[in-house]
Image 1: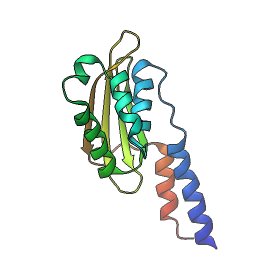
Image 2: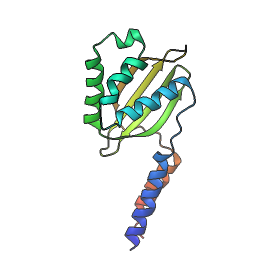
Image 3: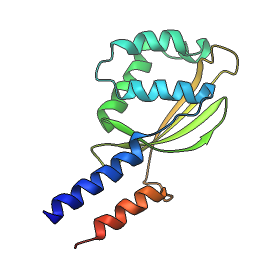
Length: 151
């Protein structure tokens, strides 16, 4: 019974770490939220339309649409469902996210650059697998302390 209670508490703390992510209310933050949601979409039907409507012309036309969608789909298949681990940088025209695979101990850095003029289309996207970040927020440290508890 103690193990069940411990697991339940650990699950709730872990869930609270990742469930309440507020993307910055800036152009890059809004676009990053959209990209993050697309990465977690099970269906790729929205992807073509999103790229055509929300990528800046110069970025969109640098590659065929199929290359952009393939890149999203390969990332989805490699990492599965993603959660936001951290947002270490945010500005009007650029945001950096650290994403964690929900099923694996894998991390991905996502950088979204947007145009400063409305409608703030995406001018560049960078995806890069990274090692586990060293800096952790205090809630995750507390969850780790709980996992060390054997009582």
